[in-house]
Length: 385
Image (cartoon, rainbow, N blue to C red; front, side, top):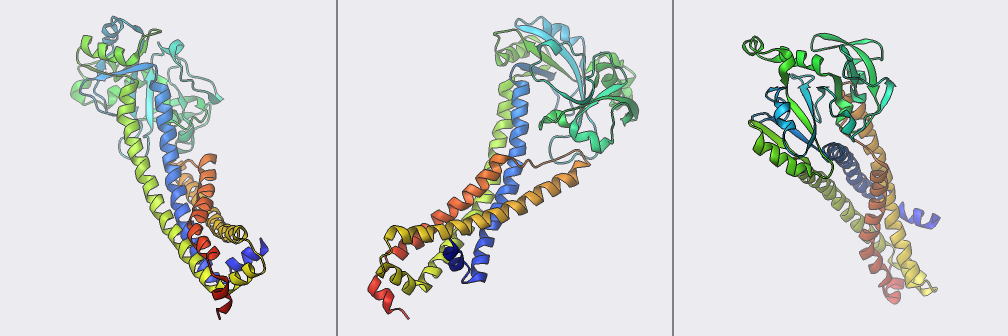
């Protein structure tokens, strides 16, 4: 091993430049991969949340700024065959002016009528869980703690109103981390205040909602139930789990391909630089290889020696690239933490795959030079000056 390391660094500048090529590729792979991991975890969390329920909005509503619905619409939805429970809710953007990259911070209010049917559990890290009657109190997602400077038992100002913090949710790595939960009544009042003055004068806060969460009876397909609700209830848009997958998961697949495509190009350049370096190294050590073969070195030994050298170049480049990528990921997350928005997630599998891939890339890139080394003619090699 000592001899292999000495051979590697005979031409220090050339070897360092080659390692740098792999480093850049792994750096890009780690940063892009960490972004993809975060997106995948968010999508996975969304899939878990939507897997057994139907979300109903106004037919003209958008993704975040949904049009208002009357809470009485719940009575129509409950009459649809297959519906177990209907939970009224209000979903509002916490900040409508400064929406950053990622899932925006949201205010969520609900009447908790579907609580006993809910399968997506939220754990509490500090304080207590919010109840449907805890007016003037909130439960805050973990990513918003620093952004809002909240503490259990103290007040936080939301949309110009003061609320007491009853609990802080445990980290889920999904959407709830950037959400604030309050009672339906509190959310209705906030939502009412965001509406144009003309509309405010015509409706009362307690009749306004933005969405309904519908829980299907046991054995009922939520996707089929969504179709039934669309047909039987007027002026609403019902979406089951499949709608989430079609809208979000498919787009995520495209984004992942783009992110890893960028990293793959960087790694390809690094692989070519290994081939170039190893080929030049072998041409410079032709006589040395001839001597080794003359004194009995087997083809297998020479092949292993040069593949090990190429693998070590990949390993060193991978480790340095991972370190730089990790520094970048943690630095950006730290800088964005104050805004309640982390966009990277460095996982163990990403770390393992980055190092494994860099070593494998090095070995694969070293196959041609190593093969060239074992095919060197002993007589011609010994005549080399």
